[in-house]
Length: 95
Image (spheres, rainbow, N blue to C red):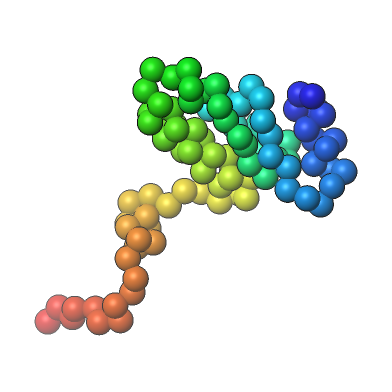
């Protein structure tokens, strides 16, 4: 149905829409931007020389597409590390 058809389907329902068919890493962002809640992928993984690399690449594209759709920027550097660690509440004081 293409991206325009996907947009129409997403606009016509309050249910989450999962896009399937012709999904590649390069198309993930535009599919999410069209309103899809997610993607289902087969050929891009099954036809890959290294399936693990293909899955990781698609997962990265999904994460980037989701952040882009929400207007958020991915955490980097110290902010990324802080998101991984719980606060201890006991900072060391330097004297």
